[in-house]
Length: 191
Image 1 (cartoon, one colour):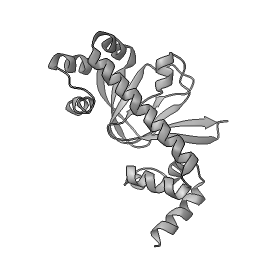
Image 2 (cartoon, rainbow, N blue to C red):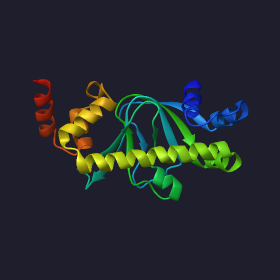
Image 3 (cartoon, rainbow, N blue to C red):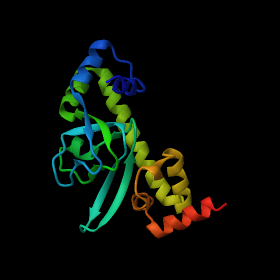
């Protein structure tokens, strides 16, 4: 749980009692590749902090086309935050692209901590700000960057991604076809 406390300390300083309160609502679980964390149309009760591995969020359109919205790696928060906040059903699917170790945190219990302790309210605000920045970045990338630039940015953020997940997942995230990704890679690596 030290990794979890270290993660939180990037955002706020907690006294030992508050650390203990947070650890009490979190559990470290192991998931296998392809395990589902959140299912579209189902009620979500937890959010996640990735200790190791890669998780994706995605839309499944007409049961055949997958649109990957995001990849989550070590010490990223994950989960359908909109569904948790609004107490609605999840709109996205989340699954493990690799074997993962993930801190699972009960959202309602976390919100009780937020109500009781202003430091947890600050943590919550910081985590939400991080999510907003992530989405703004994704929208900017899709609006302004070309496919090659998006690929290079992804490689900078997750340098070894191609060693861990399938090319078609990377292509879906970049909003291109696997053939386009192959051409981009060939062009970059033939220089």
